[in-house]
Image (tube, rainbow, N blue to C red; front, top):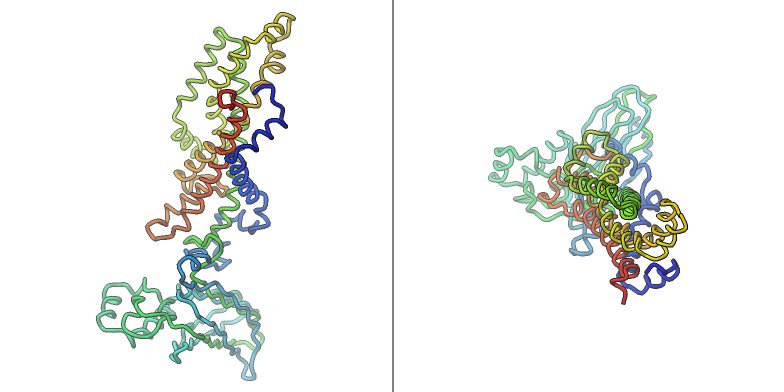
Length: 467
């Protein structure tokens, strides 16, 4: 083992399929971490916790990934965005239509309208909806405002809710009407589902089929001042699916969190593992070589530190200090270095009895020279495996701390924090599996990658496992 060079180690490592598979998994994680600004929005990564930023993006909230339809055979409506630059007609107001072609099994989750203009006085905007069956929901939108940048969410607008429910009443049974309005359910009825449903009994309770076809939104905008202009209308249909990993209830793209969380996991795992293992190697080597009372004292210190319950203490310290990933890295290093000490000490004790160490003592070599030149170089190859085995523990510990601290956790995006948010908003109970499974799988993949690599290195470098 100790006579193997780097080239020999690499050649022997590539003989093990587990090591190659671990490298493949690690390549995926490294690719995500390095390519995060390319494959994902850099601004979104840095503003993950800025709810106002995600509100401005107008992404659908709490919807599954787009590929879900391929597995279930159900077509989910995608998110669509239409930009209109209206012009005043001969009567001095704006009038135009926007057509939405709906041919999916699952209807959209919301309709958002954004108005941008140069206005000094109040203007009126109305929108009528002509359905494929020829029926009209009049005054779906009926708003007056003097805001030059106005945003309207149909799902959240009380006026739109009232008019859609009034439309549905015409076709609903008395029993269901009493159930909705008598039971106080009118505030939670899915009005967007009603908009895209066939008429009939049960349409308020999502029991009627969806109505496919072309939906026409007729816009009319009146400005009270001739100088006022409406420059741009953005019409957004929030689909029933979005992106690679879907969105959470706050409208955040989970893919962004997974990609940028890979950076944090990789940096934290490697830094904690490398630094703590190196400290443990030097500590164990010095303890073994010096021996005597020094060895006894050093070993009692190591045993005391390793006996401290790590997770509760980390939670207290991480909550007390400003919760940044670097503070957590320092805390993990402080309490992780004792792990490899016993193993390293036993190896150093064997090396200390070798003839070349005795010869070095005989010619007057100093303790530091013997440790640095003759003992540590024999142990360092084995530390590669120790580092690989230590990375999963650091990543899992961080995930546990971030999960338990929740909103008081680290300021950076971490997979544990994503899981904590999912738990806080009851993602499992509401069926939003796409909020829970991706970060959980990434934690498992990162752990498996280093375990496979560490196992292969251990079989290469550990003489007891050599064949």
